[in-house]
Image (tube, rainbow, N blue to C red):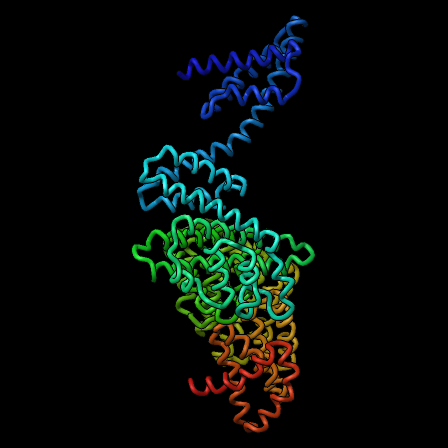
Length: 621
């Protein structure tokens, strides 16, 4: 069979070359159409070998022929064969997409009747594939599924029809939403830009709910717009396979569309990166919430739960490959309030089911730094240790250095300063070996920070010891300035401020904390903002500037509590001590004096919540 096909293709190639020499081929398009008509699907490799043989033979004739007429004819034949080769490359490019779709359809249909059919569909449409399907190919996939369903038994045909209809509806939904993808941004004239908003009238969900006509995604958007959870939405639905596929398609289009738009904010790339991070996290959390909803409400729900986790992992893997993936920043760079509180649990669950990959190590790094800020120290260490092991196996030295740095910082929280110094020293050595300047800046800062606190804990008054540690911190800051990383700058400035507080140099500490707050605001890291404000309050307290103490510590307390960080209690403790010293009446008077400075940052509601937080702290103490 293959021999006769080879002979046929050799004859076709010779025929096209002869027609070219006779002037019967008028354009390259004519050659291309002949290839379309004559090369059978699935036999491209045989045709390519035949064409390669003819090119080699003819080139040899050109190189060795001594007869000028024969050499001239061989040269013209070689040009004709080169034209065929060019059009063959074009044929391959166009037919690769068709072949990929044919393969996708075969895989999906092959999975019918098993627990794998939905997983196979999600695998072949995974945006992390080397050549992911475009929207046009999604439409073609739906058509091919509809066509092939006609050849299936009555048991399986309806399922394939549902898949196709779900894809088609999702593309129709996207057609209505595309022009309103980012219009909600321009409607948000106040407050933090993000996915939370005031229930019912802000954020993207309300805007999208008004535009989409299909009832299933519309109900989801309305639920989210009103502050409800995806779990509540699942409880009210009776989703078919087609409905689920529709939701997959429309959410994927929205997520990818937003990230593409934010990534192109060239006039402010830092803002664009921050919003892209927010988008990746918002959609991955949403899919994890959907998994939780199916697990609670749907009988025999493993199929849907696993599908939701599979999509979550696909999103996180795409995110982990981005240059702006926050190895040194927490989820706090993008979220605040109630929306954040369960995020880590939602993201943790699908990761447990994933095999060790480089992307998994990076996501675990993010979860570890975030859980540390929440005060979940043992959990943070577990995340970072697992990430460290995976990063080493994957030879991802940047991620390895990041986790050594995070482990150093976590040991400081545990007041295990010798181990913190050990991790920081290892991070310094590895970062320098690998040329990781960002990791080196963090490592030097962590080393100096740990040395200062260790000296304080051991009550060592040796000025040279402190001076050497502060020197390290300054080196870290200088390096962070050179690499232009504001997250590292914020960390180094915070560490220097704390070091100066330890050294009883409150005025010097204030300068560093104020700069640290500016750097943290630039990156959108609410945790570092809150922490710097809290320590700034302590510096003002030591200088007996009680108005400034109340202003800064109150802001730190509120911001940290809003992101569910246990560190809010540090600020609350300081304010409680001060209130005990000056008396409740004087404390309230001073709080009223700084009201105009507090409200622009956290609003009237935030200001009114401050006394309640202090009462809550006293009740828990």
